[in-house]
Length: 231
Image 1 (cartoon, rainbow, N blue to C red):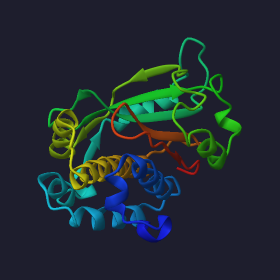
Image 2 (cartoon, one colour; image 1 turned 90 degrees about the vertical axis):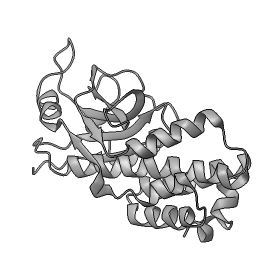
Image 3 (tube, helix red, strand yellow; image 1 turned 180 degrees about the vertical axis):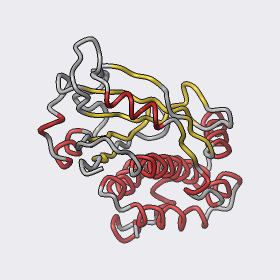
């Protein structure tokens, strides 16, 4: 559990300015290491201790209740030479974004395609990419060949809208602050789980790293998924 790994109560950590970064890093480490079950168990255990409208929305939201459609268009984007240079797609970035929302209030989804002009994705291991995107603003940021919004996300609307409302109100009490931070991480986790579920079904024919993150929505927390060349 997070308590054991950082030595403190997660609610006390997440509810203070000093501890928030430490808590987010601890959960982020689990997600970036593909330890989703462990991260989910920690987040749910913390949310159960803070009864509120926000925590209730998290606890009621399973990954099976989230859908992502539009993958066929992403398949075509990946298979087509990218940008004006006509280079092969070397990496895909999929970001959760509240710049434009889905019909049910879920975050929008931005899909960016990169060539090796931005970064040597094709010759970099997953571990090397994780080392570069651990902190905000990785070296390839903004240097994509093209960007579009072909994916439609549904099922995160109730949680997302409540988080956006509370972002404006800015919770003051320690427990309320903690609940907000934990719920943001929970939204991030559910988004990543839904995206990876869709990626598991793709047949791109070669190994392509997919950077799963967010654009000014929740904490910066970028994970790396690598498509399997055998599919």
